[in-house]
Every structure is written in C-alpha cells, then in structure tokens.
Length: 306
Image 1 (tube, rainbow, N blue to C red):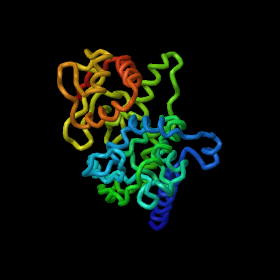
Image 2: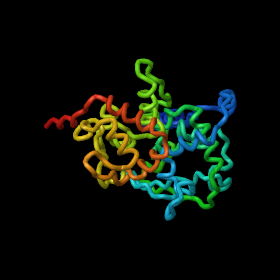
Image 3: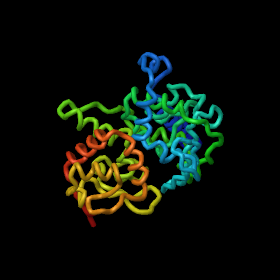
Image 4: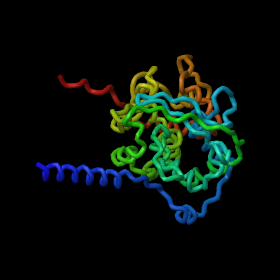
C-alpha cells in the first residue's frame, strides 16, 4: 500500500513539474533579437495602428472622453470574472513608461509581461500576434507621445481556477500558435490589407467569433456571430443573414458613419469601433469591406444530435 501511495505521489509531482515546464511563458523576442530587426518607429503611423487596434476602447480612463488618456480600469465582464485593463500610459510607475520596446512587443505579440508572466487573453493578443513588427514599433512610438496618467487599475476579479495565471500557459499550448500572419500571394494587396486589419489589429473575431468552454475562438466558425463577453446581447454574423446583402460601399459607410443600409445605427461595442476606424484612411475601410465580402457564407451551426 505504501508503495502505491509513493508511486501516486511521484506521478503527481512529475505531472506538476511537466505542467510547470509546458506552461512557461514564451516571449517572441529576446532583447538581442528585437534589436537585430533594426526598426525605428514613426509616431504618425503608430497613431493609425492605435486606432486600428481599438486600444482606447479598453484602456481609456473611465469617466472622461479623451481617448488618449490611457489610465485603464474600465471593467470588462466575462464568464470567467471581471478583468480591469491596465494603465498603458507613459507614466513610468503606474503605466508602461519604463517598459523597453521589446517588453511592449512581447506583450502585444505573445501575451508575456516584462516580468515574465502570462497576460490573460482578455487582452486580445490571440489576434494582435498577427501584427507586423513594424506596426508594433510604430505603435510604441505613438504611445510614447501620450500623456502620463497616474493610478493603477483594480486587480482582476476572477473565479478559481481562472485566477491561476500560470494556467494561461497551458491554454496557450492548445489555442495560441504565436505564428503571425503571412500574406496570401494569390490575393490582391487590397484583400491582404483587409485581412490583416480584420484578423490582426482590428481583432474582429474576438467579438464576432463564437468561443468554446475555455474562451478559445472556434475558428471553424470565424466571424459567424457570438454572444458578447458580458453576456448582454450578441455580435451578429458577418457571414450570413442580412449582412450578405450589404455591398462593399455599404460596409465602408457603416464603418465610417455607423449607419447601416437600412438606416439603423451600429450600437453597443461597435460605437467605439466606428469611432476608431473613422480615424483610418478610407482605403483601409475599403480593404476591410473587400475582405469581408470575399468570405464564403456560413450558415447556422448544425443542431446537436439527440
């Protein structure tokens, strides 16, 4: 009996050790690798990346309207608990003013903090991982121009076991490839730009793609509509229903003014999306429209078998 208990104990210890190793954070770049890219940032270009990525939608300081005051703290309710996006202003103590460029790059592209811990995927690095290093370095240059905002966001309020941050590493093993996005040589530059914006900085799938039990996006039903993270309402399908009747011009107009072809106004989370995308050149909104219209229609999911 003692031998059985000992064997079981050893298996538990070995399993825990293996899980610890497998769940280790894996930043995309070392400092040397980032420096070797030889990139320099352009703040004007970074401003466009900022709005394409919707950074202010989550990180803007609550209770005020300036999208460039990034003190964080706006509650994001999810089935796993409440997340409070952090301060990403240039404040050196409470924000990211003291972060090195490679620290910001690894946070955006691989969901790893400067301290070497996992960031929760409520920060949409599952999509941001597809951003180019040049866009990231431009974004960094723009963030450096923004005002420092003192104060820290509240701590996340998550239910156990989701409060175990290291477990995010196991989630990443299954649902995060850290692979970036390669252009499709068989498609036009406009189509590739639209795909990049939708799947990368625009992170449209984060709301419009249904998720599994652990919050992973169901890529087999990408952009097919999904319940909103806070449980109130649903993001519509971009591959079925009335959206299929929209023209590219309709989509461009909706992303510019918020008005749909039937005269409705895009509301809820899309209000911020429209506000941000209106800052981009019209060519980007046209590229998004071209890409979305190219996607094959996708009907409702098959009913579950009895």
